[in-house]
Length: 358
Image (spheres, rainbow, N blue to C red):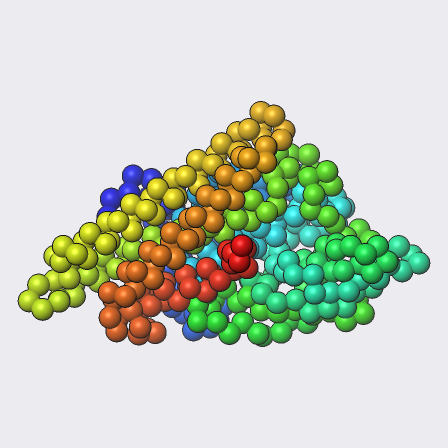
């Protein structure tokens, strides 16, 4: 395969060696390996979307999306943990400034959390909050320093977001999926926890505390394109491993790669992936430039970002499932890289944001 804008071009070779070199040990341990985490903290990747006011990198959305794809290509679990923890770091633009300065002083800060409103919050006479609840799928939970969670605020009949410190939550080992094992997307819970009112926030552009374009970008489309980019990276990695497998595996008297039917199927899937990927990257770039120039993105352009992100995942699903059918038992063996990528992709593609019942 020859890809002009291959995601590996934005990564240093030593980064790839560390992240992939410890991927198997990370899966065995059920969480990211210390060597992988050391690199992430050294490069401050969990601060990619954290505001510069708090020592963050505050990357642009196009830069973030391209990196999401690249790190997803390197390893599924690392990419998934980065994508979700980095996404939670984006909330820095909406947090109380004194609280944000406090938590982001930590060089190993990492935000994890859940978007499900599975907690109940009550306003106390002091203005603080009393919260109970349990939340699932907090990617990166074992190394998280702050947890974010949505709660139903009964007194106001609305949903609001809150922050809990690591020592305030009970982590529950519940992550039991076929893939993305090392992302350690565990559950967490609190019971009758009282927290200061400063730890409540809302992720609406009008509620942004940091007045930078990054925090004016709508959350839905930001989530769609960043997670879709991650899936694109995993799909590309799967294609590349399939090509290696097909060139080494014989079908009758010849290697599988020499089969014209398989070549045609492979090239078709590759072309569809490339077209869908390009459309999403262009939509993201266009929407970002419009935001910078006009402070507001039209609904039609936001729909393009959503539709192109959803299309990427649909195309990647078809690609992975089509090529998998030709991998034989090598694709089914749990100890092969081919199988691990397949499992990671299948797990990530089940994210609720890409389940379409319309």
